[in-house]
View 1 (cartoon, helix red, strand yellow):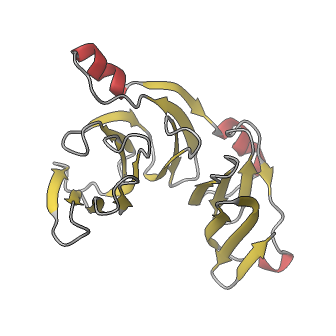
View 2 (cartoon, rainbow, N blue to C red):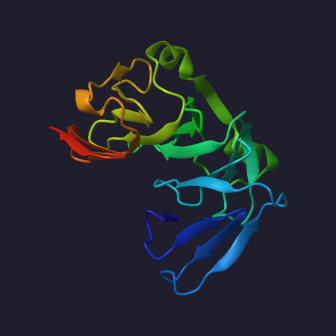
Length: 217
C-alpha cells in the first residue's frame, strides 16, 4: 500500500500482479494496472512526494517500473537479477531513488521528476535512469547477511539504515561508506525482522528480532 503524499485519500494498493487505486479514502477501488504475467507479483511501491504523478513499482521478477501519469501507464526502467524488496525515495531529494533486492543487494540512481512532456524526447527523459550505482562493492566486505529486511532513510539528516536478517548498517553519505552497528550480544542468534528510526533524530533507533524489541538513543 502507498498513500499519495499530497492527498491522503488517494491510495494505491497491489495484490499479486494487480494494482488498484482509490481516490475516496478506500471507499471504492479501481484496477488501474495488470501485469500480463500472472506468475509475477508486485512487491514494493513508492510515490514521489515532490510530484505524485511519479510512481515506482518493484516486482518478483526483479523489474523496477515507473509511471509518470499516476499509474495509468508503466515502463520498465531497470531489470535486476533478484526480486525487488523495497524502493525508497530520499526524503531530501525525491530524484534520488534506492532499490533493495531480496538477497540484500542495494542500488541507487537519479530519476527525472518532470511529468509534463510535450515531445517524445521529453517522454524518454522522464524514464531515463542516470548515475546508476551499485552500492554492494562496499557492503560485500562487511558480512551483512543474505536476506534483506528493511531500508530506512532518516528525514532529519538523510542517514541511510539498512537491515538484513543479521545486521543493521548506517551510512551518512548516501551509501558511499557504511558502519555496522553493534547489536546486543544476547541477540546475535536472533533474526532481525524490522527497524524504525525517529524522523526527527536519527540517533534514536528501534529494532525487533524474532524474540526481542530493542532501542538505542
